Length: 147
Image 1 (cartoon, rainbow, N blue to C red):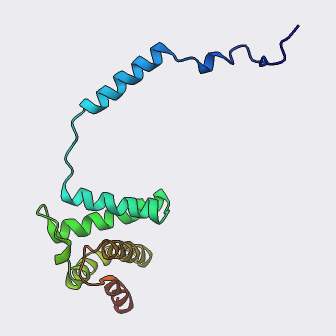
Image 2 (image 1 turned 90 degrees about the vertical axis):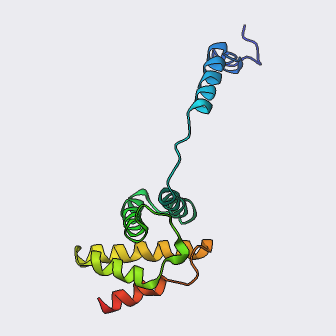
Image 3 (image 1 turned 45 degrees about the vertical axis):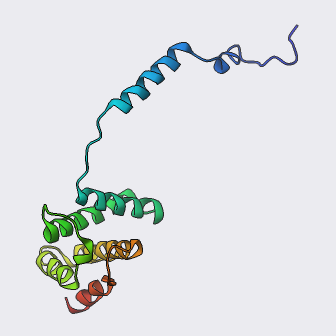
């Protein structure tokens, strides 16, 4: 005769017992993760990662959108700052316009529009963080109208 409190599954109690093999391997894995040296990210990488978080977490954009936006921002930062320090407060409208003039002619109108959208989003992100002194987003609109 079956006990009324007993589950129909034979292993119901087994899932609740701690597994000595599992807990020791988990502890070893956690220890190994702490021992792995952190790779120091460059200032450009930190700015890019911050923008990526903004796009994915705060804006909820799809990974496909990030694949379009992030290379544009990376190229802008590389063009403007090179391998030197990233001083976003020194980013000016002339930098954005020059970047757009150099790169927009390489793309079809649809791709150029995506590039402008990526830059507007990035400049908005910088403004929200307080990283730039002036609102540079209108530069993208002016360039689009005059392009």
